[in-house]
Image (cartoon, helix red, strand yellow):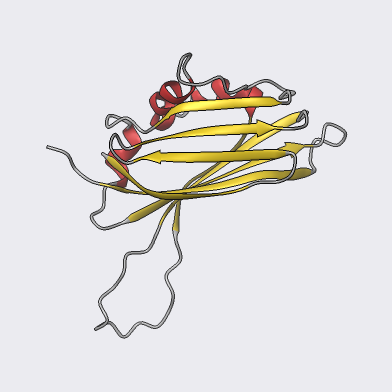
Length: 172
């Protein structure tokens, strides 16, 4: 099971993201304010396993870097096509983006408006959690929302960034 530890968000004038954590039921919610249409929105997700703290007795002075477990960037309008091939995340995505839980637009272009996700959580049966379990380890999900230039299809403009930290524990 995943336990949320904390989060941070960074906005731009044309794209705002507010998140709230609910410790009681270990979920989050978000409100995204898109102030200007985004022709081709991209979502980048990077899942990192943070290095474990070592005891002071070790003589190694080198700094351990986080280990990248997952790194993907996808156009929002291709999201479900992509998710069909990524079974490790599929049930979490369905839960978060289902009707009643979200009005998040996956359209290209993404129209200006206010979008909510009311049920941000990772179900205990998510395949990736079994792979991630290591005691006393912190995991970080870094998300970045970009606007891709329709003129050249290459140039990206960062609209928003967020970071969610969590640990994994076994539940009986």
